[in-house]
Length: 204
Image (spheres, helix red, strand yellow):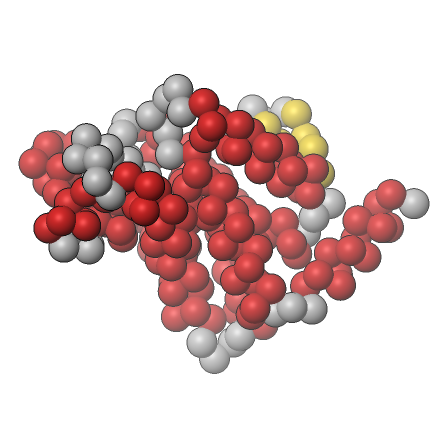
């Protein structure tokens, strides 16, 4: 499965980068170097490295549960090109999620970010479109319906991006999520009918 392959590649690259700081530096999302030195690979390479084990674990833990499920949906909807389409979806999510940050920070040589959060957010929100009422468990025990989680997640990302008090690129979470919604709307617009029907049934 493509999801398992992406997880394996991300783990291998992240572990290797931790041992080679110079390599890590060349893979970071650095808008200034992209703009002024044409290091365009950073758009994608930054999505396969992580700051530490906790960062890596939580991204891949979320991706495992939502990614495998979403890949099965791709296999059902687009059987002849499912693997290729799913891989393109994931890689584009890494790129698109970082574009707003790139335009905002392209003249700031000190800005760096890394991680697969944008792509993982895209996968999560695309999955929520198909299963909006399935519960997402925060911290392993507190379950809330997917569509409510989506609203809370969006609010949190917007607020944290305004404050910018940590080193997490919260705007990548937000734009990755938006990409997931838009991409699935383009690929399979009928999903919104099912989405509304499931929520309506739950609220009755």
